[in-house]
Image 1 (cartoon, rainbow, N blue to C red):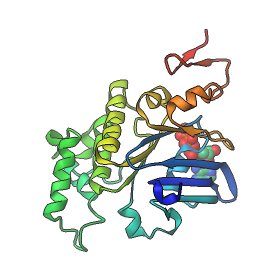
Image 2: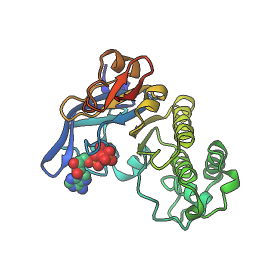
Image 3: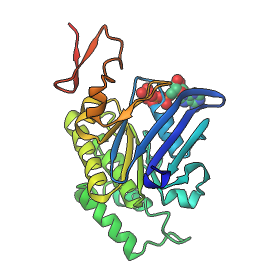
Image 4: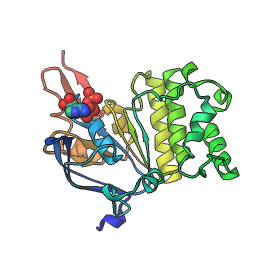
Amino acid sequence: MSNQSYSLRTENLSIGYGTKVICNNIEMTLPKGELCAVIGVNGIGKSTLIRTLGKLQPSLGGEAFINGHKIAELKPHGLAKTISLVLTEQPASKNLRVSELIALGRQPYTNWIGKLTDEDKRHIQQNLDAFHLEELAMRKCHELSDGQLQRVLIARAAAQDTPIILLDEPTTHLDLYNKVQILKMLRQLAHKKGKTIVFSTHEIDLAIQLCDKILILNGTKNPFGSPQELIAQKQFDNLFPENLLEFDERTGGFKVKK
Ligand SMILES: Nc1ncnc2c1ncn2[C@@H]1O[C@H](COP(=O)(O)OP(=O)(O)OP(=O)(O)O)[C@@H](O)[C@H]1O
């Protein structure tokens, strides 16, 4: 199938820093409306891949395409209407109110004085509702819990209304309930609004339950497919050194070896 047929596609992509390649031969193909987790051990390159797909840093080889266009060739304005990024760093603007931070998502669409149109206000209100943030709308962001702040950051990305949303570890520091809540919100955003969403995570069990696709970063061989395909191929079995953990195919999760 051609690159045009996929919302997001990489071909033989290499990522890294300077001349040092940390992962190569990354091949993923995501149609519109799918949720994809990037998993792998600490330091393997998950954040680096998210940053590379978001064009915050160059790839070291191969190509990444969005709707058939090379990401490397997207200009800043086109990029802001194509990809929204939710990174692990806390927002510099924590002094903003929740509604103001979500309004920042509309920046690619506002005119040079940043005046919000009725359309912008509609997007902001819709996302306050969708992410259950109505009651927090006037709160300063530094007054929020980690789970609430993560919801605000995702609402800002949704307000940006791009076909692609990339998130770096959106569930870090959250309890199990909040992790599941965030991932189910992302799943809904993908399935109901047709967004293509890629996020890095250590939550392998939840990714297996909730994602359409998973990319296992491994260095040179980076298996990609549906959770069921990857389980059938036994791709999770060698993810960690086998002295401590084993993957249980029946439950789709890891068990501690006693
Ligand atoms: N700015 C940088 N310059 C050079 N090397 C870097 C830089 N940032 C990260 N690295 C290295 O690149 C490798 C991949 O880092 P990255 O943060 O992408 O991994 P990760 O899979 O997201 O890790 P974790 O699960 O611990 O968050 C690591 O070896 C890291 O030390």
